[in-house]
Length: 276
Length: 282
Image (cartoon, rainbow over all chains, first blue to last red; front, side, top):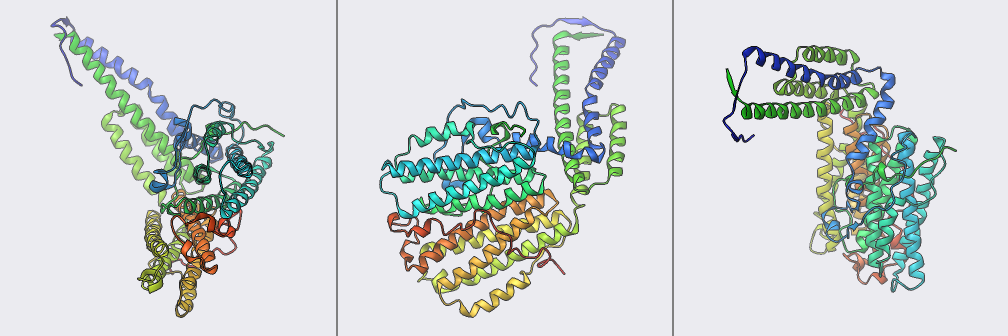
């Protein structure tokens, strides 16, 4: 800390006063200690409280660790350096902010599953839009392999949405049938600018990478066996979609040795869930 | 006794800064440790008595006003020591699973190393993309093996240096038949798919969070190897090896099946997962 003398004013003070003020300072210091004590209490709490506490930990992590989408309003590819250099960042302000975050009363597994289902619905709607645009001749000549990819991937994303919604339903909540509203704004704006198959593939790659990153994050925070299994069996398939898209785009299909959670959606993007 | 008022103010401000920094650091430290403790205890891996003992000791420290910058550093050291102790308390099955995973990686490394000595994979007659794939994938499997090794060590286990014994038999039997790129691709596909299925299956079984995270971060990459190999296999089978290129040119020449052959299942299967202890250190 750089000190500057603004004046040469001095104040008379006795040693007793200094001792008293130091004592006051110590008191003020101790006033802050209950927070620390509270943390220790939490650590020594009964094991029966663990599930709740663990959910709190998980929720916080899901909100703070992965938050590229949340923090910057960006949808960013996580497919490694090669992919990142060519895949556009879909930037834009969020005009839609789901109420789920504010009214986060549903169990964590349900909220994560709802987020995942909404991402799958978004993938389905995006691939459907691509098929419609291709049929209308708006994307130029569509290679057979790409058409097959889009149809197959779309069908698998429907299956994924159903699997995630099974987790939502098993928690007593209504299934999520709409695309993720928060991210759809950005994706739809990007899709409106797509004019060819390469553009579709790049946008699809962003979605597939984001889904894979989200499910990898989910594996670390979900607690139910059904939910973990759902995440673990879908995440590799999204990465396979990404590999083929990379191949079609002329990029190395396996760009990184380890999947990451970079670019994952967060619970701030999750849709609201309603009891059945 | 006379004090310069400005200097006193600055000293107080400095004291407040130090205090604030210390509290922030110790608060984060405690948050992290609480999280760690909860996570481990949720899996039955932490001793509540140890926690109470620690809490009592820290409570005493707080009551005696020892939490300052220096004291915070001491708590940090204690927390780190205790967290390391907790991390080492994982169950043996986690270590065995990780050893099996590493044994699969060891075999993949050995197999790609052999494959790259073959002229049609690593030699002059090899397709450029296939050769690059074999080399890159070999490097990625080495990274995976190192990651599993590190995870095993964190749990206090013995690193597995041997290949999976059952899959090794598969590779040994296949060696005499490796006379074409298609044969090598088929063998690699079997190994990669076995690895992916094993990691998907064990992701839900592993109790230690680091072990689970490491395994989960690798399963999708093995699945990508599978997807790529399936596509290459299809193009080799269709006598379209020239399309094994980045990008495949012209794209319109790719057979329709190339768009879906890489990912035949909506959910990654686990029926072919290796038994959890198959590659464990004996």
